[in-house]
Image: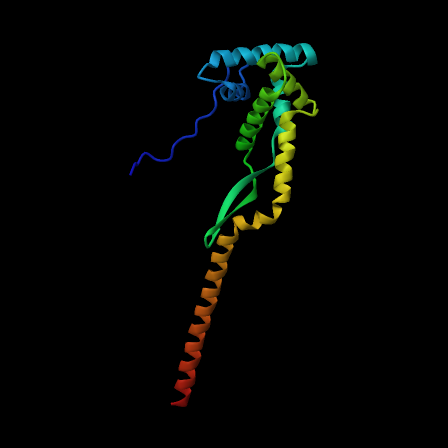
Length: 196
């Protein structure tokens, strides 16, 4: 066993031009085959398009788009075996902020790739602008789909904690039964003592 202690969490680095961690996270998810410089070029050129169209800072537009796409609730699959059959349930789970940001970035990139356009630059810029202005875009549609799935599978939300609750209930019952038995033994001893 290693005795070095818990691993330290690494913070995301800043990108060289905008000095923003969010931009660096987006570029890392957008990058293919390790070509990071190409991914940076795509984002910076998309930023120029965003500035021309909206007259706003592209990093601000990106942050706004991410905040509008962030899901509050995610859906995780749980398998439950009953005999030979296996049922798969989708359980709604509250997401951490860091996970939600990464999911929103993934959705933004996926939505921009699905868009029709000549280049990734125009696709990314139009997706970010639409997401920041709350227009209909692929990433916001994806968010609404997950919220609908979480809403429809709300009945299975209790199944996440069911085992823990059962354990606690059985422990409480066991403690109560033990107390009753002890009290019952004391009562019997007192009764036998009085008879003598």
